[in-house]
Length: 257
Length: 334
Ligand SMILES: Nc1ncnc2c1ncn2[C@@H]1O[C@H](COP(=O)(O)OP(=O)(O)O)[C@@H](O)[C@H]1O
Ligand SMILES: [Mg+2]
Image 1 (cartoon, helix red, strand yellow):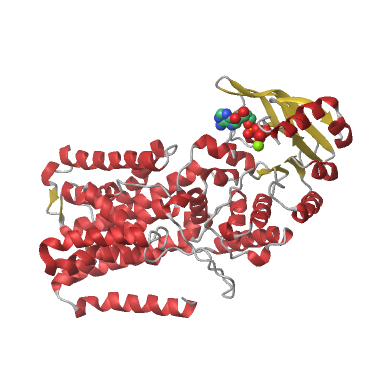
Image 2: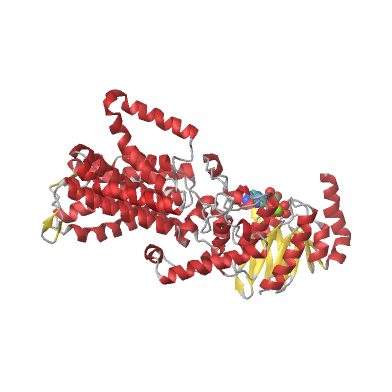
């Protein structure tokens, strides 16, 4: 478990300020949601935390360590794992091989071990398989392990992405709109799953989500973004009734419809 | 194919490969030797293009590095052939990294052009440097010997390259099913997702280039002593294309497919010799038809074969469009 702190982070794309002077703190072991209208900068915040975008200014701290300037793979190695808003599986590989990817940074066999099939290499391969299958079993997908990822139904692909993220043995898990495209039942299962994840893996969870019901049910803390700035933060009940949030968030939603 | 059938067919092809010198004439033995060289080269390229998904149009450069290193060390410095192997492999690994490094941020079409350029640079260096014998190349490369036995006959070299080919296939197979091979495939499937899963793409791409280069150089070293003379002509752009062709024809990332592709690329034009002037035309038409009707290759890679045999098998289709390149920003924003 680790706390995550974002300090005065700004992100500019040329003239566009996608995120402006944003600060927040996610306590270890909590489940926090980030909400906000489309284009508010939520995914950009994830991309900065995970090293895909470099903030124009500010710091991002995992525990006591600044993550800014590190490569995504280094950040994953330090215990952050993410899913993507639009599925980003390894489409032509099996479900099992997809999840095995997480263990890459937790293992160390080299070309030598692979060529000679050394005992250490075999042992490591068994461990990789074991961890991957545990993660699959956890999301209820072990039976599909030899299927090709792209042939799975959409809902299962979403679960697979979560299993794959768990395979990295993270301390902080970032989920970018995990419920997008799921039906009611799948959403209910997802809520259960996220709660079980925190319990079993003792994780800090950060979720970008649109579904108000889901946010109410699982998050302890909600951060609201609009135009790249934080406009409210607090417990779900308070925040979702906050006048500025209702105006910024729901107002725009109606417009969009 | 079930595991038993697989084993049987591997044993059968090995037996045929071992007996071949006694079953054919010199002409076909030479064709078979060339096919074995192509198996080595195509497996090396398979690591780069098939596993890691990095298009390389200059692969013959590594073939050249191996051939010239062995040629120079043996003629100028009188080294033993066997001692030149580790040196040429090491040089190739370094050249692989040097060529790979500037291409790391590039995707598909740009990558193709840069690798093509590097392939040409190596060839032109070979034409212009004194140490590589300029345009006429290096000749009088001595025969290698094992103890007091000198490898000189056609058959000796056939068996030498057969052993190298078997080792190359084994090595690529084992790498492919290791965490390193999987990392390459993750990069091929989705570079950003691979990075997000903790895979250092720069390191793994450079490793793919190096391993590919080492295997290619091994082929080159043996080529040098087999031919006993080498010239820049053997390392042309066409050579790179023919090796790539073997990989694509057989099936990107598929080890048996690439073996098949290498054999076909060499054997088909020979089989078509009877139609003389038309043979490359027919060969070309066959390739176009093949890419239209079976773009995944003759023997495509399968990723759905687990240890348990009883499971629902999805068929794998890797159409080119699946792997098409998206803009970086588009990908990260997703
Ligand atoms: N790579 C990029 N290049 C340019 N603009 C970007 C990029 N990524 C995001 N943006 C812009 O930043 C803003 C925030 O986008 P995003 O973080 O995806 O919002 P959200 O996830 O809240 O819908 C948008 O205006 C978007 O167009
Ligand atoms: Mg988003």
